[in-house]
Length: 348
Image (tube, rainbow, N blue to C red; front, top):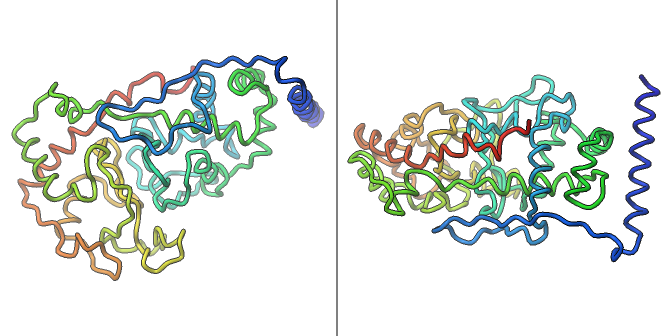
């Protein structure tokens, strides 16, 4: 067995050496042809923050990223691919879990945010720790309670796989995987998951009508929710303290973990309301199971603190009927097409 792994290791080293030799050749003698992909910008959406100018979209890069996303070999024990926390059934969030499971029976600190419309975000993760799709994938791969792996081992594993060598060559011109290529491919896959096909979107195009309850809920949303969750993205991407008490087991103070500033204590990124009916559990630590629990928090459960958002000082009063109507509207933001889109599913 040791001899087998030594042989594989030597093979990978040889492939790396060959790639450098190839890279040192006259570039005019090498023609690397890829299939360009056009970034989708739905009608009515603003310009995305990230336009892939430093990581040109290609079909080959997308398909490589898709395979990597579902491959457990990016985790230490091969049981926790990216898709284990970001499941298609939950719009690439974690299905009906407060926090995700990680390596060695651990749990993640936070509820896994769903992965859609990421190209419109200037900062990623609940606390905005990462500035790009390229860098944000490093945390789950390297963190001890998530995938708990290192890139040296990942490169060794992937470099010994014939299909991966073919795919890396197709996407980037050389067959040898590197950390840079892995992150670029993952960014191409996750950055092209777009949600813009909900009933709400059809309504805005004049192709659907709201029920009386949905229409009433839409008006309530505009009056009481739209400041923090403006259309069409249904988030302003800001960081706010929404009055949740600290979970004493987690002691997560949000944005302050990044900035070190007391004024950022308990502030977390405002999530998009798109697909909210499909992405339970809710809040940064997944403490709420249902949308009704969320609305009950805003109407009567908000706790005052030094950094509580000024818009929530008086809570958001809602009657039982208003809560029902508001939930009816929120359900119109569900884009179920993503749940069944084979382009984003696990490769066969």
